[in-house]
Image (tube, rainbow, N blue to C red):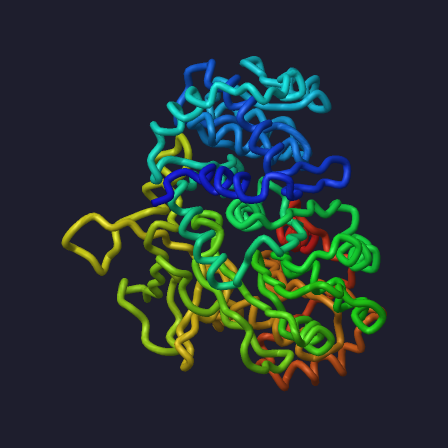
Length: 504
């Protein structure tokens, strides 16, 4: 039985030693090189006599970061990716929470890190690569790890402004990757086009599918996402056939109607998660790329990436919501009403998760951990932790989970309970805008709609069209046209920024 994710790399490096593992356009690494460089760095980490401790990785996205993650896991510790573009104050808060003995960086980021951190810094560029590696030292460290020990921690934004470090176990990742390999038939022939930053948990699928199967991981430069035509050319140049992206990238390509001119010719699997995928834009992709497999995945950061999935297998109208599907293997889904009872078909409730996919909690924050991760109210016989996602969902007549929206995106307007996500679906269903984000202005008590469009809306036509999908009280009364939706670092629409804009 597999215990540590580095066992994936060991097996793959033995079978495909000279195959390209990672390509960041500046550097390529074979599986043998990736393993060897990671071993060399792991030996240096082990000298600090640490085990099961967090080691931050402060560097820009690239091959160096992938090597560092593997090295830290080989050393018996867990890694914490840091966004080098984050404000200094946030980075210092993370370092204070971690109380880390060591931080890994490279020469390009060494000087900046020195101004933020006073402890031990390992600059991986200073470590000489050697084939003569004392593997017994690495094996001794790795043998101390069990599968419920941490593999990584990713810091998310907290409601108090303080970042929270979600801790994920080796077992959670191993279960997830084994499920994904089997479900999507991924093998060494996959060429994965990575979009997600390494401090965003969606990148876990890309990284460890590469480790586990011998697939090649292409790190797509961030600037290509602003130029969809160049992005498609890049995908074709690298023969990318598998992507797991936030929906906005796919939406952008659909809005430019690019698939009528050029297509990602090698594409086979298109997976998406992180926010709602509008059927309007998915239908465009399905029309012009009908032979691809499309899958909608769902999971909060407090889960090992995803806990439900839906492989698109039937037709949907533009205004319909897309299911988030059924539980991933070894994940349990509970939808509970306010009385902590299981909901009936089509009854709304809070989506809760149980199983090995659950995070271990928040690093150095037992108070927040206890609030978020609690006893399963349906089980009074032995300890069983569930995570309450704060997401509203229901089971449809097909036995699929349908995502409705965040509990905190459910508003009360003129006495009606309204889900903002339902309004957004209706807006896209009119076919009059490219993209939208609906916000509630609590001060003025009005529903505000940000939208991308080639021209200003004809509001009379728009409202008349909206009445085909939602009642009058759900139609926005404030409209803000934007040239481009603001995006956060993870590639999602920056709702916080829009919220601030609507309150001004």
